[in-house]
Length: 157
Image: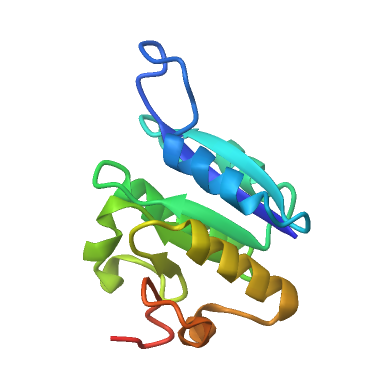
């Protein structure tokens, strides 16, 4: 199964790395499962979301896409989620990061899966559930038994 993880970066000319430590850590943890083909997609947070970036995110037809949610990238994350849903409505968009605890559902689509706090175990479990059940979606996160995962569609509030 293809899993793409977005890594927002900025100030590349000062700090020449395109990969956030959190994204690398998540990818490393998920690599435990040999059935997951993990690709990290760097996105410059200072650029507008482009068609080229979206094509790169979707070129391998990912079933799951991890989107980081920081206060300085939240609007960009929302745009990415919306545009990904338009182009690939069957992909699961998993959103995590420091600003996730304060999401306003009105600013997002209704079918993202949100992960609070450390995401390694939660994202791996989401991926493994999708491998077992190809029909798994945001409505079913309540069945995962994880207290740090929620979705508006699952109406866990």
